[in-house]
Amino acid sequence: MFEIMLFVHILAVAAWFGANLARAFVGSSMSKAGGVTAANWYRASVAMGRVLHTPAAIAVFVTGFGLVGLSDGEYEITSPFVVVGIGAVVVGALLAMRFMGPMGRQIAGAFDRGDDEAVAGLVRRSSLLGWMDTAILTLTTLLMVLRWGA
Image (cartoon, rainbow, N blue to C red; front, top):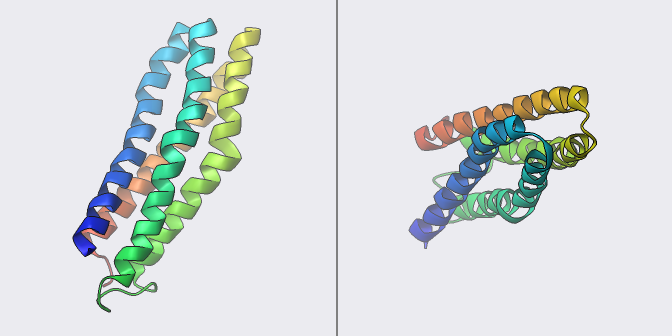
């Protein structure tokens, strides 16, 4: 059962990475396209957050606890790498709910209005937050693989 849980955990992390990287690289191209194309991309990225990113993060969280529970006492909730993992999911969720989702809708609206100044600022902030989330996820994945502090 541990191996199946680990497999699902890894797939969920991969989905989270994939969603982040798609937003970063496709979003850049779509922003350059401008207008309706860009507005529709940002609406799609908000939807992707709901149907891919959020379920992936929930799966990471649930399977992470499951892995600790199935580790036969080898790992504890207080193990440093587990604490970092929990923190990464919480930070990722807060970034997504508080900033990324609402900002995606704002960017779409700014493209619809042709407000280039608002678009530039919002896209820059959105990109920065997206890369922050990706960096946190990357570091957390490394610490998980190394089982840091266990």
